[in-house]
Length: 194
Image (cartoon, rainbow, N blue to C red; front, side):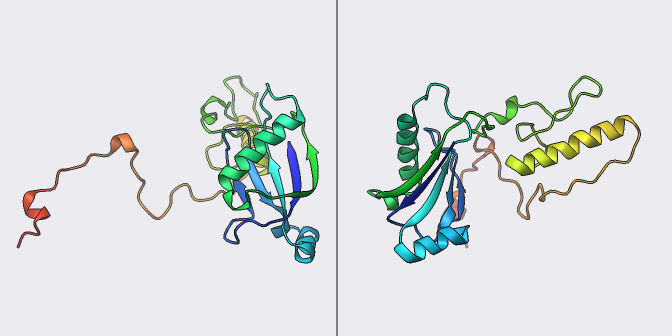
């Protein structure tokens, strides 16, 4: 589902042009189109406001009415962009279909991996579990490379390298909250011994 809105006010300048939200009511992402496309930028320069696009990658099954979906998206939008509360819609284009992969929190563990237990059966697409961060087109493309490499490996052929972002950063990993062990400060340390 995509809903493009031409509205009478802009979001804060510090906002990134594309935001993944995972909103509780269905809003998955917001694109600030006037910061991404020249035509939308020109429109905003001329009349002010913003051109934004709301994305819901998997419309909830129980939501069948356009009006209900719009209400849910607007409620979510104001959670993430409270500075535009009270905005007026100048124009809109709404498209709702059930043809997209969902990327909601907690679902990664239930996705199939690229290689299946059956010899020669592989999976590719943006819905496949990957060993590195990628989603949407990048996820589909990367899973296709992994699937092709699995088939090449079966035939003893050369695999293609797959470049990705570093899986570890410069800083040491942060322990999970349950793994933290807090040592009580000694009385000397707390009094500034010495």
